[in-house]
Image 1 (cartoon, one colour):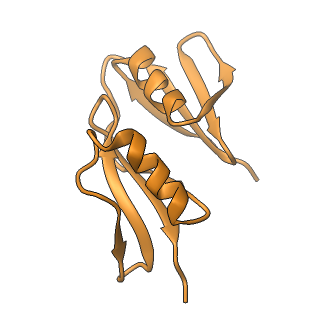
Image 2 (tube, one colour; image 1 turned 180 degrees about the vertical axis):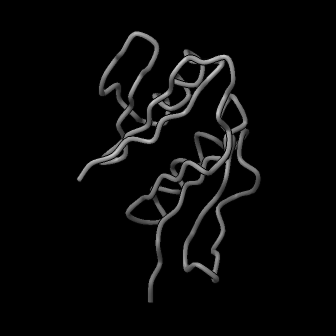
Length: 111
């Protein structure tokens, strides 16, 4: 089974560009929606009068190097440098997209 998470956006072009800069590719263009794909993860952004900014968009990487590479490109938008979170056994950092959605970058580190 595949899936797509959709968000309403007031700043369609800017938001789509942000996620494309992260490496997502356009999977499908619709009249007022762009569906992006990053690996097996699909996100849809649809032009609306109100932006959906609840929740967290999480990108999962194979290892710390992937998280660190993402941080290198987003350092100005990140809340803090990547760090280990022992509660969830993940290495992570958070940033915000142009509309204020929380975006997490992480890798699982199960022992």
